[in-house]
Length: 149
Image 1 (tube, rainbow, N blue to C red):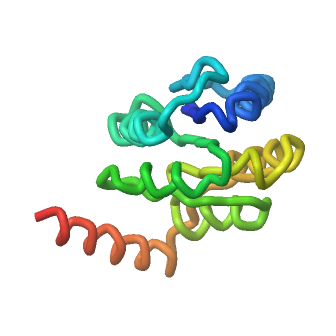
Image 2 (image 1 turned 180 degrees about the horizontal axis):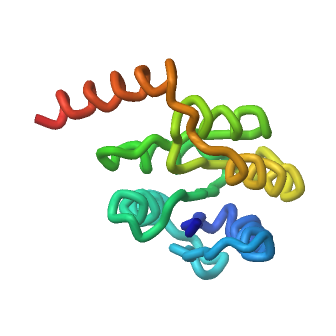
């Protein structure tokens, strides 16, 4: 599985640590930036990661900013993307198992790096289970397609 990762300047250090952690777990990782602690706007990075998923360059994405909120909002603007803001292992698990979230977002000013690592580990260890959840995801995607017309 290939993982895309990105952050703004607020979460630059977290992104760097998570990138190394994910690689150590045996995943291939593509870094979408930012590449320094200099101030950047997060939407472009979120769009790049989300488009990486849509274009099948990566299988899943992980985005970090100060709270995770802005990254989730931006990534969810890319048609076909389901990005979930998570701050604990249970929501990370459910983001994938129940909601087939291709992207998770986290806040470096909200959680510490050790919690972030556990969240990433949980998210990457599960697969979407479909079933009743699949029906609900289909409804969400149908509504998105309706609005896209």
